[in-house]
Length: 165
Image (cartoon, rainbow, N blue to C red; front, side, top):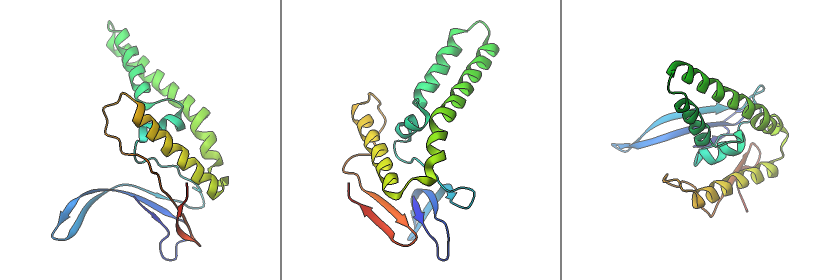
């Protein structure tokens, strides 16, 4: 991930990259996502490592739980696969709409009004939650977040500042 202000930029940008290796001294990479803050988008919350834990907070439900619930509903109605599939998709769309309205939107709507120290606290909470979840879950996924945690804040006037947690 690369984030910050470009020369002469008014707003910050973020680019998520996947490093694929190096060839003859040049780094080979693939751009995953670009996010630019501007007059119409004043805030972005972008999970990277352990995104399932972060999305559980923002969505109110784990992405894996959501998918498993859909699978159970679909398998319960095996005699009519097309109506089972339709019901599954309707249920998952209803869960997504509820999650967005009740959990994600209230956080994101206040995003631009958070002070820098509050954003650092939110980041710290999300990262510590991801560490906790990774440490105590039954998942066989590789943990990509662990303590100690360091958070960098980037402002136009102060540049990069490593926050003391």
